[in-house]
Each structure stands twice: as C-alpha cells, then as structure tokens.
Length: 610
Figure 1 (cartoon, rainbow, N blue to C red):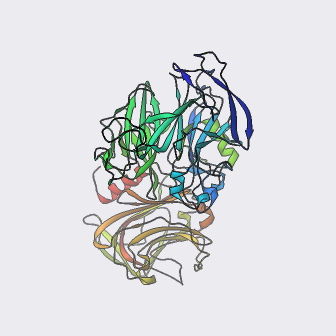
Figure 2: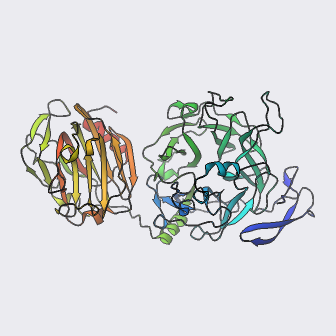
Figure 3: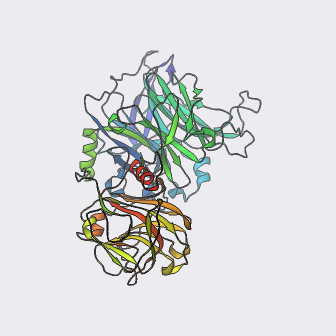
C-alpha cells in the first residue's frame, strides 16, 4: 500500500482511488500535487442550536460463542445512566471483510459536520477459534471503516491497511482532528519490534513489544506512513484522547506484566495513566493529581480500553463533568468514574451510571435531540418518562402489628410472627420462621414498569434445599404454583442450595441471568438490602453500595400482569417455600431508585449521618 507524505506539516501528495475490490482499497499515488498543499477540509462541526439530548455507545459484545458478537452494536441513553441496546440486541452493522468481524469500534463526527466515521479493529476471535496468540502474532494490518451521513444507516464498510510492515496486529484504532495538521490523526496499538535497548538508546531489532502508532488522513481512504506515537520502557496500548479548551488529555494502558524485567511500580501493571499536552505532536506530561477513586492510578489495576466523554449540562447539574469509562476485563465490563475538574483528573467511581456488562471496549458520542430521536424511531425504542408520583406503595416497620403499613396497599399476615429488637434502638422487627408470610395487595405493583424493594435484614445460616432458602420478596401474575423451565415471576431469594448468595430473579418462561452477590449470614448484624427492578436492569445494593446488576429484556408489566400476587416470606414453588430471617423497615417504592436515592434511603433507615 502507498501512503501520503507530510511535508512541513501539510500533506504534500494526493492519491487517486482506482477501485474497490471486495471492500479493500487499491490505490495509485499521483505525486503531482504541489509541495506544501493542504487538505481541503471545511469548517469544524457546530451544534447549530440543536440541543444535546443523549448519548451513543458504540461497542462489540465480549461473548465469543458466535461471530455475531464481534460486530458493531449501538446502545443509547437519554441521561448517561440507563443504557439501552438497540436493534433487539443485534448488530447494527457487520463486517465480512478481512477477518470477518470487528472489535474496539470508535466513532467520531466528521470535522465539517457532514457525517460520521466508525473505525474498528479487523479481528474476530471466534473466527480464529479463540487463538489469542495468533491474533497478536499474525494479526491483520487493516482497520475497518464505516463512513455515513446518517447514524440510522451505516452502509457497507471498507478495509484499509495502516500498520507498519513489522507489526503483527493493529488494535483499538481511534482518531481525533488535529488543527496543526489540518487532518485527522489516527492512532492504534501495535505489537512490533522494540526500538529501545536496555541502555535507553535507540536500536533496531530488539524484542517484540507494544507501541502506539499513528498516521494522518483527511478521508479515511488514504493515509500517511505510520510512525511510532507512544513508546517507552513500559509497554503501552489502548490510548484515547479528549480535547478541552486548548489542552489534549490522553489516557493510555500500561500492558507490562509484573514479572517483566522492566516492570516499574510507579506505573504498575494493567493500569491506565493520564497525560496532557497543548499539541498532539508535542511532549505529553503526566497529570500528577490524577487518581482513580481516591487511589494513585498505579494501584488501580485490571482495566483496559479507556473511553472518556463530557456529560451534557442537563445531566451534570449545569456544571462541567467528565465520565472516564474503564473496561474491567475481569467480567464486569465498563466501570464509570466522574470528575468535575479534568485538569486535575481526580475521578470518583459512580454507581449512578451503569452499563450492560456484556458491552466491551468501545466509544461514546454525545447526541443531539434529532440524532437521539432518529435512532429511537429507527429501532422502535420508546423511552417516555413516567409521570406518576414517586411514593412508597408499601412500608412496614413491624411495630406491634404486621398488618399495619403506611403505604396504599393492604397486607395480610398468615401465621404468627415473633417480634424482636429492630434496626433502631427501641423499635421492633419481625422474625420469619417456617411458614409465616405476608401477602400484599396486588395494587402495589399494578402497571409499574419499574419499582424498588428495600429492607433491613438479619440473615440466618442456610441449611440447603428448599428449607434453607429465605424468600424475602416474590411477585407473579397469579397464585399458581411455579413450574420448572416455565417460571414467570420476580423474586428475591437468599441462601439457595446452602450458599450465602442473595439473588434477584426475573424470569419469563424459563431461567434467565439473575444478579447475585454473597452476603454473609449473621444473626447479630443488620444488613440493608435494596433491589431495583428497573425497565431494563435488575440491580442489587447492599448497605447503599451497588454489588450486582443484570440486564433483562422482559418488561415487568409482562411478568406481573394487572393484579399480581405479592408475598414477603413465601414463594409458590411446590405449594410454598418460605423464609428464615429477621426483617425490618420493609418498603416497596413505585419507581426504580437511582444510586443516590438508594444510598439516602439506606442512611435514613440505618440512622447513619450523611
């Protein structure tokens, strides 16, 4: 492949595209352009008064059981909190070029505002039978490019070669407009020959190592010769860059293993470091105040694929806020960290922004209202805000009478509860033992597309089997017995099969993934537990902190019907399974609480000062 060349900061030659052959670009250079000629690129994109009203997350799915997972997926959010996978969880675009799959997609607007580019790694781990060694040592030199004027129709991709000859892979490409070059700087991760020897001086032919390379383009068809962009004794990959004012902030992963000869504890292993510069081609310096959730960044390990975006003022309370997403490759996926000051880089983990754990290394784009609405219309997504008043439809503190509650839904006790000391001094709680349970009128949940169950609990040691389980919440469309593989209910169970896990089940015609978390048994220690059954996610909080979350495609109204059966301390398995625990301050809220609301409720119930 032949490339454009830079001459004194401007592109000196043009390329004429001869043909597309199966999506692969072939080109011949025309070296007749005058020296110093620059790209003809129009003025930068401006919002044009169109309100910024949402976000797009472009990603792949890290489940390599079939080739469809390593393709382009879209998720959108109206508020950067709840994210919805579009196209019924299917890809919005696919590549049949090269390795017939993509990973690490990145999206950016065209500088002239006429459309978008999506660029991605040419790689399918599924299609090479899970051979990660092959993907690194004999990988593609190409990237896959989509160019479109409309996010609802990406069209067909093209494949272009950008990597140097001595590279063995071309991973995680990204791009940013460079005013100094009047072109897009494309940068990506490469495994190539190390060019620094052990004495710190340059020497070719050293060991293989990870670098970040770059090149330039004005059209994502023809590119300049690749060159090393980031290189150090620490192996580096997965760079991302955001511009704020006149400063570029760059986040990069340290790929070095702890057992490497050149491991440096100042950098750590599998960490993300932050730098800044006034120029993309200038010297970048470390941001000395950069921290991840209160810790020096070198102590925050197990992350890759950093992505950063600025929140809309509507979603940040009118102040400047940035969200740094770090991909926890241990199975959690993207974890959000927020800062109010990008210049200091002090990022704090945010439980109030949550993502589907299946989405992996990708990129984020702030959307205008027109763009957001067009995607919703294209893929049939309705996100009308509920206008119902937020309230507790059921609230029981178990003072004197288990049938007395301050909510609107009536309750009926079956059995005889034992009353013991409550979560606060001088109050009472109820001990459920055997077949004692409470039925709640179905009006509490009728028609709700989201709700929250919260309570304080002392959990007795499970004994295994049905008798060892504690059903803390159960709701279904009717009072019929549950049939295996045809389950239709939502429920909260602790101690199944002798474990100390609490699981929030949300089943429809069979089992589906349920968030769960170990919560150690204790007959002396109160734990406050909250489960948010949201429109698309089910989330568990323990003592005000999120501990587990799973996406669900089944609406709650479908599962529960118009007048559901609701129990505390019972489920309809085999004619009845019950509970063995102590409960207090049991509440059902008629909306899906935010993380902030969950924390405040926990503090109020447990008597903890903010």
